[in-house]
Length: 439
Image (cartoon, rainbow, N blue to C red):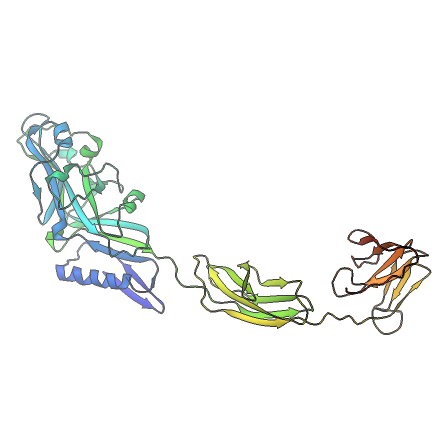
């Protein structure tokens, strides 16, 4: 039974394995396959399952047929002039009438066309199903053994020359005929080698070999009449109701971009702008592509929600532009933009004094009185000349002294004590007047 559902923005198609009592005619198979092909090509698809059937012209079984052949000859021969396309196919070994001699060995082949699989599909798993009609059990307990799914190499229409076109690598776990119930579908779940045998651009083939073929281990010869068989037979495409099928489950790479960032905001100073935003909630969101004035700035990681632009010109407008990108490289087509303007970097000066040669009392509160909120530093010594300026370009005034007529000691760290991070210059000579400014 096939179940198809559609939700906004994408299709999801689920298939169940054909039930053992289902009956199909050719028209129904073509109709279902047509529906699957339409759905498989529509929009973004996730966890898609596609069922492909063989066709009448591509099923067959190829045999090495002779009289009283050794096992080596019948296993490694080049095939005979017999190739059969019927409503059934078989994998079997036939004993002849001389001891340890054989008359037939058959290997079935069936071909699928995978051109309906999207080119960018990532195949996750697949299962091949055949409807087993009968088991050959003429050799008693030896009749029941493992049967292997292998690759069939396609040379063109199936013919006798294809007898040696079956590989020796197992494409699924073996199935033992003792555990198979006739009149039902039996499935082989493909392993990694089996999945790699599936073509998305054209035909690909599978075949069966018995344990005696795979292991080069002939069964013990049993006395009796000739034509004693082991193996099994199954419905080919010609049987109409129970053709071989392969059910393929795959996913498609996500092609939908993430949502854009939201809540874009800014805080501007005279020489910097701090941008903040909220990232989208998309599970596959990777990063935000950011431009400053239409020039690439940075790819901000998926956890970043802040970007600081420094050393900007004062009283200047700057534009932030962004697009979001997901882990598959899909970029949102819509720009999220915002402009902000830096302020003027003028300084409103306040008063202060230097007492006892080195104690700075600065009216940081601006109320014209020394008290709460003001600053007090011990910096310099008697005989120094006191200077002030914005030594670290932070927009604030720092203190400093000129000692011995030409040694400038400047509190660039702004902590009111000379040490790490501060500046020292030798500039001028005794008798000079000392000046500062924004030159």
